[in-house]
Length: 262
Image 1 (cartoon, rainbow, N blue to C red):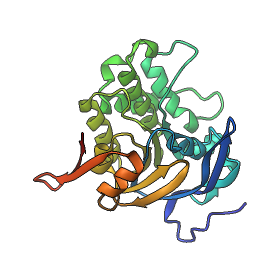
Image 2 (image 1 turned 90 degrees about the horizontal axis):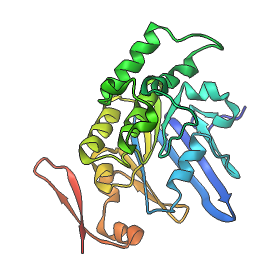
Image 3 (image 1 turned 180 degrees about the horizontal axis):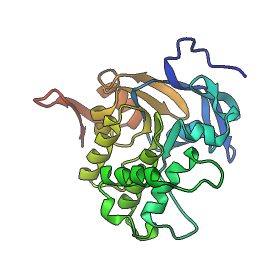
């Protein structure tokens, strides 16, 4: 089994020269990114730049035509799904279920990678699920049907399911979609405080500036740039990537904000 070229084990995720064509469209063109252990990494770029497709390759719902994804130095496609699910949890944009599940039942699904075949859920599993719901402010919804929730409420439940999975790595695909500003900040703060490895596609540049340690910039299926938020958020780069005029300012606490000019 080929290991990633990372002898010191610095990276939780290494996506090496990922190439994929879907529906006749060349979506990703040899993209390579690496995610250091314990870091919060953001992927930014306009719609259609390949952010979500790259993440889907990382959490193995898509098989790339070329290149490999390594998880803890091991090719992820060589791992059993249950094995990779103990290491990596996902909060995707769209979550549909064909059956009626309660909120608690959805969160309990996060415990399945830790269970043997036919093993029943125990008191510890339920305690972990209830604590995850509490963290996202959904503890009073445990008996509600998941399908009756708003998009924002469903997203918070899916985060709780990922928290219940207790993995050292989280993949988030535009996790603040459907959320109001209060819950956007709450969700990102919860994830940040977990002290785990995070890779997230992020639509809101100010959210990326506030929470990410490092950023990868996608454009037309290629990696356009990478660096810290201070290195990436420049007016010239944002003009090139998003075709908008911006002003970069810092508030009195030193936090960066991107202003979009008419």
